[in-house]
Amino acid sequence: MDVDEFWAVVESAGAGLDGRTGDDGEAIAAALVTRLAATSSERILEFQGLFDQLHDALYRWDVWAAAYLIGGGCSDDSFIDFRAGVIALGREWYERILASPDGLADHPVVRQTAAEEDDGTLFAESVNYVASEAYEKATGGDDDAFYEAMKAREPLAVGIDEDREPDMGEDFDFDNDDEMRRRLPRLAELFLDSSKD
Image (cartoon, rainbow, N blue to C red; front, side, top):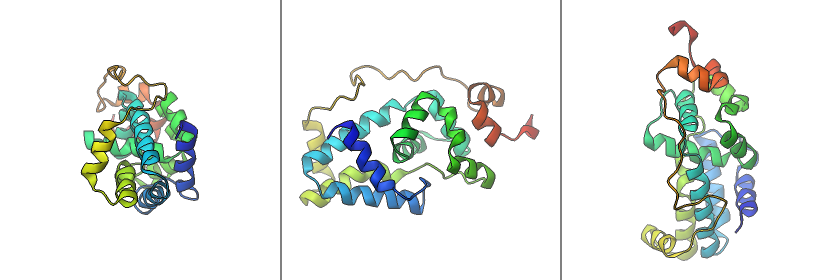
């Protein structure tokens, strides 16, 4: 599986859904499990390898700050789920967010989230586990078999050096509204209450 195939699988699973968590997040995850389980165990492992690399590339302070604004806070675990949710949006949105997390202000679901004060948008925990579930279905194995198989294989390259420490960019205070407005002005406009100043 190459990167183009990876995105084709993700986008076909999310077709017709808006990317919210809850029912849509679960539906995307279920569709991914079904699609992957119908392939070979090797393709499932390749999917997970690519998922891990794309997920890791989002491990940056600016992306975390966007998750913090959208979610009304964001723990380490929640940030894992947020990055999975970004991947579930598909290639175009993933690349836009990777280039500029503030671009999430253009996503209709994020705009609706701000209007409705719904802090669950884009946090898609179940998407993190689709490959392991698909592997269990396809092979009759268990979680341990999946993780052992992942450890035994060579990672696929997607232009990300796995041996290099991630560059998260400059750390900053997510609770400093002025800093958030400076770094993510469009998201801050949607999610920060100006009356707090």
